[in-house]
Length: 286
Image (cartoon, rainbow, N blue to C red):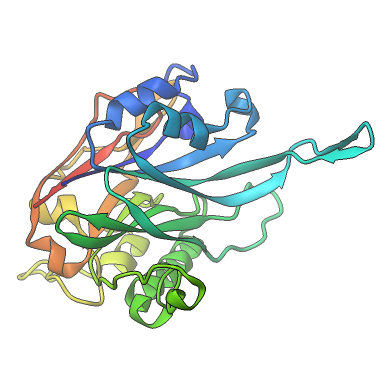
């Protein structure tokens, strides 16, 4: 089962051109795709409805979208009727297998005065995979503050650990005619974490590395799939600054719950992809 995470930069590539089709071409072979920076009514891509565009380009996939940021983009009174228009910025999941439950989790944030800070979110999807139910999260953390990222990571990890208590999208749904959703402790968390390996926020996510044993899979810390597989090498990157390719960072990850670590087969970064300023991160799970 192949997973791919891709910050699509609202469909705009390293060449500055908007091209949703090449975004899809880069990840269409994945069974589950997590996307970040998916937008509606966003001026930099001609106000495209990207959730609708991506769903249309992959008509055989189940899909869900969750906006973190929602802000007015020109709502107006026209001929005596209000016409609403919001700009939305968030995360998306597309899956070969049914999505049976969805939560859009809003992450903590702090008001800023001179730098952009938008509401960040994590989209949780319960997927009926052939091997059993699995939770998939498409995540995008703050881009400018390590302290804020650490706070967001702590909040996100609480949601991962407390799923059994919180119950996901719905519990006891049969009372209102909804299906009873299965419970699973297995999860895959993918996205743009805006952090470099071994920075404090990365350690907050996966725990410190022991000098002898390295990192062991535990219930308290997700496993960085590519690190676990030994597939991340010095100099690897998942983002480059458009127009300045010498400025590169490793910002995008796939984390899995401890029990899934033993099912990891392979992982890689598609460094040749130019469809966005980020690179797709892939993981193959048995």
